[in-house]
Amino acid sequence: MALEKKIRELKEKREKMLLGGGEEAIEKQKAMGKNTARERIMSILDQGSFSEYDMFVEHDARDFGMDKKHLPSDGVVIGTGTVQGLPVAIFAQDFTVAGGSLGLMHSRKITKIMDHALKMRIPLIGINDSGGARIQEGVNSLAGYGEIFFRNTISSGVIPQISVILGPCAGGAVYSPALTDFVFVVENISKMFITGPEVIKTVLGEEISMEALGGARVHCEVSGNAHFFAMSEEECFSQIKKLVSFIPRNNDVKARVHDPVPPDKKYDIEKIVPGDPTLPYDVKDVIRAVADNSDFFEIQEMYARNIVIGFGRLGGKTVGFVANQPMEMAGVLDVDSSDKAARFIRYCDAFSIPLVTLVDLPGYLPGVDQEHAGVIRHGAKVLYAYSEATVPKLTVILRKAYGGGYIAMSSRHLRADFVFAWPTAEIAVMGPEGAANIIFRKEITTAANPDEVRRQKVEEYKEKFANPYVAASRGYVDSVIEPSETRKLLLHALEVSEDKVVQMPRKKHGIPPF
Ligand code: HXC
Image (cartoon, rainbow, N blue to C red; front, top):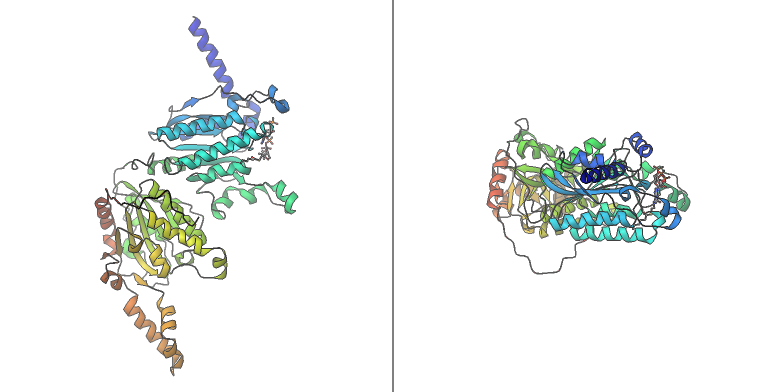
């Protein structure tokens, strides 16, 4: 009887906590197309797998009326569960409780689950929906953020860290997502910025809406801070589940192997790349023509579209695809595409995911804007990331591989393990037109018919260099292959490199061109 009473008491206490900030606040949340913190967690985790910790944690702040404020679970829900059977740690800020603001105990709950995730070597999923530092708690709130940022950094490359922005994420609070691996945003719901519209108006006199300043689209298309865009929370949750299916739970194990399914026959690899090197095509079709089940899970789809990155599988094993996109600025490397590719390469390397690079680019983007924006420093990130990566590196040169672009895109010289080239590959210092104009300038300008001589010289150069055989004769390319052989050879290369070992010189860490 006594036990029954105690259990009833526990249930009542739980019920109160589960109501968060109360029905009115929940209604307000729903009216914005938002789910509650616990609903979000339940939607991401496998049914019935959530185990909540610290439900009864309370703040002990006293100033500014806080002594009279009861904040259920202190505005954040934490715990563990599984996503498609994979254990994960998760937290979700509860906007219905003091706007999900972060006070000392709120931050301690988050750092507790972060420590747990790191100790157990399981992925961490953080759902952000908060007005930022709890103003009444002063420096304790700032200390809380600092503790979170520190843990994000220490966990980086050890466990996957996923941030989901489902409401405001303002001020310094944005730096936790920025330190994590992947950021998910939802149209009309996610807002991320360092200084809000009001501050901007006061300081700079400029009027801007919250959406235009730091809405979901802005961070996917312009700033590149977010990696996945969804139209609703539900779509976002299924994207998270899909991502988790591709990645390993920590840096000591490999991603789970799935049943291999051949690509869809509708992607005819012989017909995708046009013979004329000036014509564009969608490199994602090449990826779909080689990947298992033609399934390609693209990352940062809306940002720096001249490079394509994302996960797929080959023979059931996760690989990271990096591919120049000839449909967008001819697939050049520039400041943004270099940043995008380099970070992804480092992610794959940290988590033992082999890299498959598809090359077709005229080089780095020339121009004053790019030079002044630091294309030297940003472009160097690609060289650094590929050189440093010790996971299996498989390269296929589809068409153009000119100049620095050739070297940067996982060339033999940066220690690619397998370099294949299609017969359409053109591996040279630069394109035939540019090259002929420079090295035959005298002949061309002094000729009676310069156009005819230029045409001849361009042809001569093409004949000699715009092919894969010069590189193949030096062993820079291992094999010139038919496009239809690509998948078979990539599968073979992956199998051969399953237990690849590379010894790097001992160092504390390198100094990448951040
Ligand atoms: C305490 C907060 C809060 C905060 C919101 N609330 N933000 N309480 N500290 N930072 C409370 C509100 O008082 C309100 O409480 C409830 O949450 C809901 O907020 P509303 O304003 O009614 O909601 P909404 O209209 O949707 O506006 C959301 C908002 C706005 C845009 C986020 O609340 C806002 O501008 N908040 C302040 C944002 C901010 O400046 N934060 C500090 C940033 S500096 P009641 O009791 O009325 O329901 C920072 C530094 C971190 O974060 C540095 C780390 C390095």
